[in-house]
Length: 108
Image 1: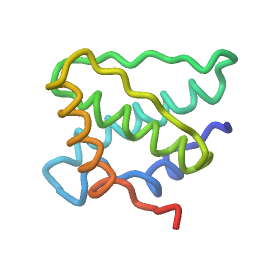
Image 2: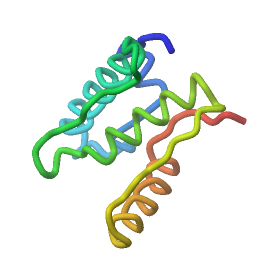
Image 3: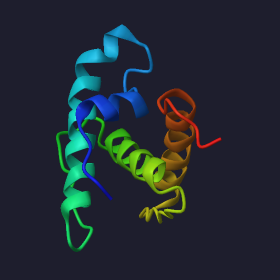
Image 4: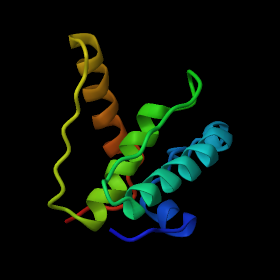
């Protein structure tokens, strides 16, 4: 996996989903997702950590990283491990909404 820059990341993911009110947070999220993607691309062990304050969009950043990684490697498989049923359901809802509203390209 090769590192990418913000220009490439922004072509793949739109964290604001065209909502002007979300643009300040979306800018932070795309920078975080790109940095995390690049950490994974440069890591020999394929490991990186994501931590931030409540409400900063860690779920969407993680989904953005996975979407970018899958764009470059469509065969990539991801296992999401969630501690409880309600968290599993939240991630499923967020995943579907993210793919529908934030991913800018399709694999066709």
